[in-house]
Length: 403
Length: 141
Image (tube, each protein chain N blue to C red):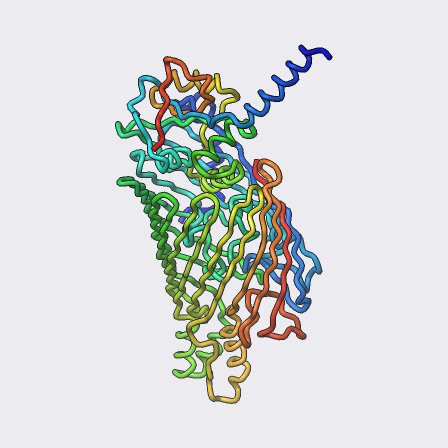
C-alpha cells in the first residue's frame, strides 16, 4: 500500500500542473473547483450519552452539548482535473469533526483516473467505497434528501474509503444501464481512544442496474481487520487452552469482515421510495449485524417531506460466559462489555427538505430511537446514569449547500 | 382616455400572460446530427449524465441553459419531471464522487442554437423562436 502523504502529494502536483490548454474537448473545463457543506444543529433529549452521525468521533449532541453543531457540520472542497479526454484527477478534502475532536482537514478522495475505453475506467489512489447505495456521497448533504443517511445501515461498516485501485465498467442496452465497480485496497482508521483499526486486503464489488426510474443495487465487500487489544486477549491466553480458545474466537487480529448489501430505489421525479438491507459477518468481538431501512418522500414544488424506518440488530452472541476461574472475572467483564457494545436499535424519522434558493437546502428532521434492551444504540460517550434500552428523541436542523 | 396607452397596456398584459403560458422549449440537434428521435428515458439519461454516447459511438455533447433561466426550469419540469433543485442534487452526487461534470450551460437560447448548429454531436433545448434551418427539432416520444 502506498503512503497516504505520498499519494496525495503526487496527485496535488499533477492536478496543479493541469492547465486549461491540456483539455482537448473545449466543452469540458480542464480544471473545476467545487465545494459542498453543511451547517447543522442537533438536540437530543438524552443528556447521559451523545448522539453522533459517525461512529468514530469524539463528541455529539446530548451529554457533551445540549445543542451540537459537531454532529452534521462539515465543509468539502474538491478539485477535478480533466487533463485530456482519457485522464482525470480528483482531490477532495473534508473538514469535519475527527476521532480526536479536532477539525484537521482529511483527504476523502484523491485519485487519478484513466478511461481505457469510454465504458471502462481505472482509478488509482484514494476512493470512497460503494458499500451501500449512497455511501460515496453520504457526506454531501445537498445531494441527499435526509439530514444524514440512516445510521442503522450506513454505520454497519467501519471501512468507508481505501487507498488502492478501482475499476468501473458501464454497459447499456435495451434501455438498461449497468455499472459494475470493483475496488481493491486497504486503509487505517483512527479511533477516538488513539488506537487504530487496520483494514487490509480489502475489496468491494458493487453493481447498479437501472432502467428509467428503477435502480437495483447489490454489493459484497471483504477486508481483513486488526485492532490491537493485547492486554485483554493476552490475559485470556494466560489461562491456558480454555482462555486461548476465547482469545482466538474474539480477538480482531487479521480477521475477515464480510459485508453483503442489497438495495432498490424508485424515483420517477415527484415521489421516491428507497430501501436497503445489509449484513456484516465477523468471527470476532465486532460481531455479526444486520440493518435495513425504508424511506419514502414526495417533492411538492420546493418542499420534500420524507419518512424513514430503520432497524439494526446483532445476529451473533452479545455475551459470553467467559472463563470459570474467579481470577478471570475482570477479563470476562471487559469481554462482555465489548460484546454488548454493538448497536441495536430501531428508529423512525420524519423530516422535510426545503430548496429555498439555488444550491441551498434547509432540512429539519425528527428521529425517535428505540434502543434494544441492554444496548446503547448508536449513542456514544455513555455516562454512569445512562439507561441502556431506553428511547431517545433527536431534533436536527441543517443548511446544506453546494458551490 | 388615451386609447393608445390602454392598448399598449393590454398588449403588455397579454404578452406577459402569453409568455408565462408559452410553449415548453423544444429539443434540438444540428441538421447534420445522426439522431432522428429520442425516447423520454433516453433524453433523461443524456441530461442526467447516464447516456454519454450516440448510436454511432460518438460522444454526445448535451448543452444546458443557465440555472434560473425560464427555459432551464421549463425544460427539466416538462421533459424530465424534475425541479432545478433535484437536477442540482443529482449532479452533486456525480461531481463529488468524481464521476462527471454537468453539461455546459449557456446564457441564452441564441448561444445554445449556435453551439448546437456548430456540432453534429450536440443536443440542446431552445425556445421555438430560435429554431432555424441549421437545427432540427427532435421529437421526444
